[in-house]
Length: 218
Image (tube, rainbow, N blue to C red):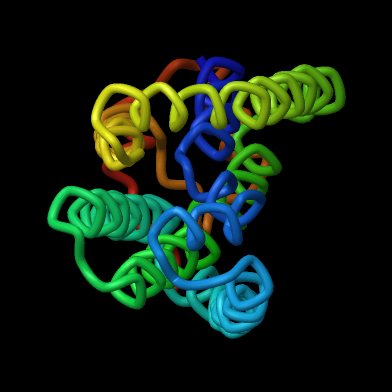
C-alpha cells in the first residue's frame, strides 16, 4: 500500500496539467491572445516570480500544517485554476484572466503537490524498503513526466481542431486534480509528527485505525 500511494502521488504530480503550463506557458498565452511570442515570454517572468514566492511560503506551510490538509487544499485550488483557464477560452475572456488562472494553478501547485509529493514519499516507506521503493517511485515519476510532455500538445491540438480552442483540455486537468484531492482524503495517511519507526511499524502491523486517528504531536 505504501508503494501504491507513492506511485500514485508521483503520477499526480506530473499529470495535473500545471507542469505543462510552465513548460508551454508562452505558447498557451499566445493561444489566449496575450500578444506576440516575445510578449508572452516576458509575462512568464511574473509566473516564475509567483513560483519563487510560493516556494518560500511552502517551507513554512509544511512545518505548520499537516500534509493531507495542504495537499487537499492545494490541489483543489489547482482545479479551480484549470476551470478558470478553461473558462477564459470558452468565454473568450481577456488574456490577462488567462494569465491570472495560470498564477493561481502554478502557485497552488508550488505550495502543495510539488513539494509534498517528495515529502510524502520520503516519509511513508519503512526503512527496510526505503531505497528500493523510492527508486521505483522516481522511475514512475520520470516516465509520467515524459508521457505528459509528449502528449500534452496533441491533446490541446485535438481540442483546438474540434472546438477552436484548447479549453476542454483544462477541464480534464481539473478533474485529475479533484481526483488527487479525493485520493489524498481517502488513502494517503497523515505523517506529520510521526517518526520513521512509527510509520514503519504501522505498515508492518497494519494498524490502520491507530495511524489514521492518531493526533500529530505539536
